[in-house]
Length: 105
Image (tube, rainbow, N blue to C red):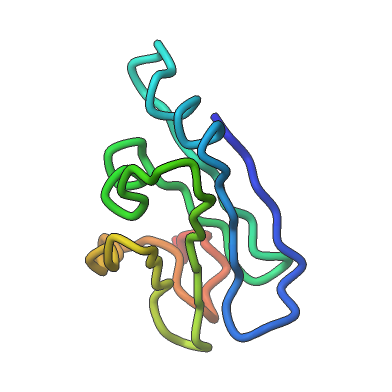
């Protein structure tokens, strides 16, 4: 797991990956590799290796940036030079703003 943090002081959070960092993620021997992007106190996004590879196409030694934005009350959006990841609707019963996450049994 690779973890990155952004202070969250702008419109969206930006996470820069050096070419060496990208290569480390792409070549990691583990069957499951995640990049965990922490957006100050607003959001946490976990991105699988294949998703990150789509966002960050191979570059010639240049750094690339992934942007995570979380408009209030909306789904988190994740984009990079290779495009934007598709939005995924939360499963029934998953966390949503205003819920405690506890069942009302």
